[in-house]
Image (spheres, rainbow, N blue to C red):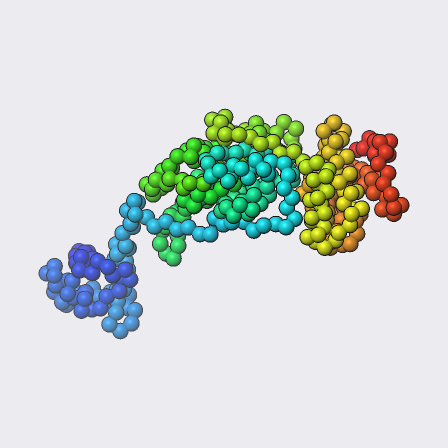
Length: 373
């Protein structure tokens, strides 16, 4: 057909015309190049979409004019500011494995670390604040069941109308020689196996671009979890998965993070009181005794719930807002079932008899309350 011949000629003559818009003269010239008369070219032109005087759009040839994608090996990669030195937190208290984590980070060795412990005991903050103290860049990756290779290593994104490869947090940390903090690693699926090579400290092939990324000196991987990668038998962490043994074996050491001692926890509570401008020594003492009593009972199997250090910090913040100790505690333990909540509140009334101006922490008084949980 004449239209097909003209379109092929136009494609050859104007290969970069993405808009598909041409003047009658351009169409006639293309037609003439393949032996088609100007009158037939004119008839063809009138059948096209008129944009304005002297300009027509040939919709049937717009797609062929689309620019050819760049070859895989030269695909553009972009990064952003996910890698940074975290700010120092004035309320942070150095304790537990902080010294060990500090030595590991200072060594700049590749030395994968797995940190496990119950929720709210400062695992993540310990790594973050150690990096802040040592002025080391870090990247924090929050793991979910949906986290996959695209989230971690990187993937293609549409940026300003062009397809580019966005480097994931793992690659960014490797290129910067930063600390890669994989938070809640036991919440992931078997898709985390894409990190096998990364956990060996060796160069990694980015399959989607063909690039080979070598880790810069200082790069290290630290993971946190509530379990040891074997799932949760007691049902407290129902989303925790069983991590592949070969994957776990790539972590050089495992640090078990307990809750802080009463003296350390009191420092943490006081620091938060200073942070929120609500200092109260008696309240601090009461909260520490209360939480420690509950935890001991939990360890003995007497209760199924626990008050974490993080929850004590939440209570302090709530107290700074409402200026009411009991209300602050009540609001922060309301996530527990009704019986546990009431028992915890009752226990606190025995520990901090604020209204009576003294402590009543006799075993009989506490046991009486806990027996009812």
